[in-house]
Image (cartoon, rainbow over all chains, first blue to last red; front, side, top):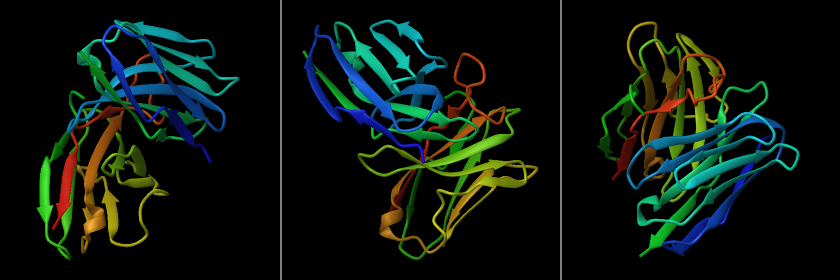
Length: 111
Length: 119
């Protein structure tokens, strides 16, 4: 059974700093998603990573995928307050039709 | 995300009542997924439906919960005899094909969710 674990679960950081959120998954998966959720809101798609070594960047966020290590990372560069949110990764099993989500990382960026 | 409409956005039910949650997928999408999010937790898969068929209901509680996606009309998640533990946000996602994300961009679009409160 595919399991997805994120760490840290809570992250408080100062503006301007860099940090990384880690997403490990337990069995082979051929695609990995990152979502952002603001309080009381739905999920906003950030990235989908389809292959080993895939790297995608959007603004201050960069996501990467290492399928051999079963690890994806979401790197935040020079954080700004607007990035405060909960970030979820989700993996899709090969041959399956459902996303399995991590617990989420609640990111708070302080001025 | 754009196009997936869920209603109501907020629903309050007394214990023992029925809750009906509706999801209209993106036009042209024939695959619908329901997820439940408990406070401070991630999303848990409940059920995957195609038009008139339940494909995977492995995440659905065995009792009181049912889902349908008729040929015409929205998908419905129905919870009978609600209990306090059913209080959660219920999200629907739709996809045009069997495996969301076939293209380079995500194709599983999430609705705004229905926040169910059982009092």
